[in-house]
Amino acid sequence: MSEKLVTIVVLPLARAHILKMRLEEKGIKCELEDVHLIEGVTTSTVRVKILENDLNEAFKEVDKFLGLKTETPKKSSKPGQILVPVDFSEVSEKAVMMAFNIANHLKIQLVIMHSYISPLRFSIPYGDIYPYDTTLLKQTEDAEEEANRQFKNFLSPIVHNIGPERWEEVKPEYIVKPGYAEEDILAFANEHPTRLIIIGRGGDKSWPGTVGSVTADVMYNATAPVLVIPEEMEPKAVDEFNDVLYATNFDEKDFTALDKLMNIVKSYDVKVTCAHVGLPDEYGWDIARLEGMKDILNKKYEKKEFECKLIMGNNVLDTLESTIERDNVDILALTTHKRGMISRLFNPSLARKMVFHTHIPLLVFHA
View 1 (tube, one colour):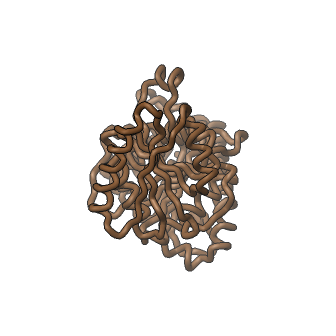
View 2: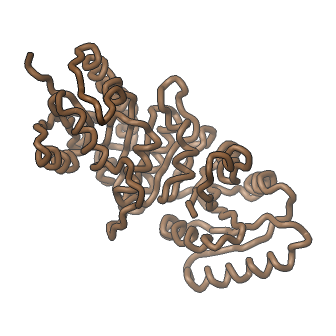
View 3: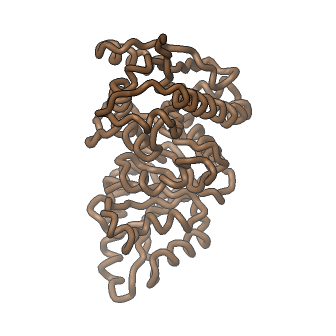
């Protein structure tokens, strides 16, 4: 029985050629096949296909290539790109629109990724020998075709509304692969220069592995800043955002986070407010620290408007929510810390609480 070619990943042409060379160096025969995910645009995307008997080794190489299991982020002098994981939900559409506007404004690349559950991908332990199974292969082909179909149906109207020529200005790349969304998002961001991850909060619960179910994992573990788009957010152009509120607890990582924040918003006409929720008995010390923070920021970013203020309140979450409403804040930014599972269950961080409460975008930096 002749062996069948099986798709292992859908990649931009340039990335696919690099992966093809890596696979062939390992003695794995590889073919590239054009796939037209988005009509009316010139972006070239291809299926990477290999022989079924090579699946075991090929998956290992794909994981290495896209960054799966990478522990330490690679440093790069490149300007970085914006990564948008999608699950075809309405909130994913809002995330893509936000990402396009930011990428177009900053003149950086946009990468859109979808991970889908493949029967074949998750039935082959790396140490096992792959048995020929026509039923499994058919299910795998169906899963890949369905993922590509949904990807095309999801993005085509977005591209049409933006306009193919404008869409091409961000040099979009599309990645469709079998895998677990949270692992693939974090691994890709570690392996490739990523300035920002934009992800929706919510998602279609009927689709396995939805973005909404992995938002918290990405927020806690990504080294790149993560912009969480809430399902309830009203559509709004990025250049209409006027106020960014950075919630500080006087952490030593605040200035690192603020540098990353300025790297994103410095070319926008927005006001940045650093706010601390404090108690009356700490008033004097908090005011002194806020004044010191303001002096440092004003000296470092002379052309940007800053405000540092103390907000009195016993409950940080409630106080921030009322401040957001009262001051018409457009984006809330804060720093979160990586926590163990027990700590997450019994003492969830402010970032996790805010993800499920705020109706405005939440920009999270990892300490």
